[in-house]
Image 1: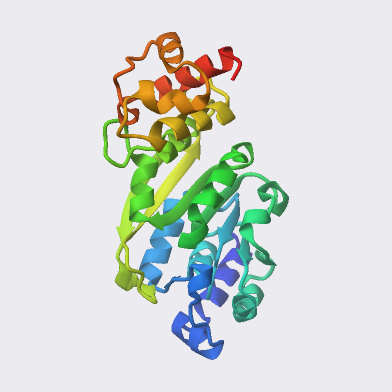
Image 2: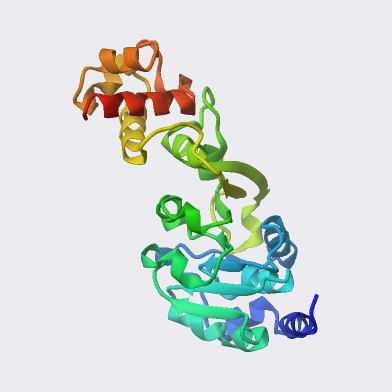
Length: 287
């Protein structure tokens, strides 16, 4: 590791404890911003290490808050960290960390939902973030459209959402999110984080998920059609497919026959490849 990085890590390690940063800057967590600050340095370090080798990456963080995970990313040797934060109080509180990082940390005051990931720094890019609960899924869905720009995503969600990302067909948590995410990414649920680790403690357990874009989707399909098919099938998941797919505006029995799928099955019984076959049948039907 180069001397400059050693100096950055020493400067970051010498910063005041996070609780002092929160108190000095009056950083009471705002519910409307989905803020729950993770202060346990062992856990933030574990998340940073789970993201892989950061020494050659632009690391993108969303919602750094007082900077717990941001510090961990710098201590893990990130070449450059770009942190996106909506709360101007946090922007001010993070200035000493920016100075300690000596050019390796850039703060952007913005809504992450509106930011073009590819504009934030050179490839390879990794997203590592404790996502605000209230926008976690919309953020992920937007990043799925930018996967060619990303090497990996290491993200914290509510455990219920994390289980959906990883669930296989036949499992209770399997749904639209499972299909779309796993169609495009290899997904690993790494570990849970209890509510007591956060300030303030949320009412739910959190989980860290590691997502790696696939070189090619699992099976051929157009994303917009796959989204339509999964929305219809899981929108009435207790009904048989011959009924739930009627909302697609074409004969469901013909679609199912073209995809070689039994019409009496329900959504949770279909594999990702079978959903892709339905999407292809919908494309062929001109819908």
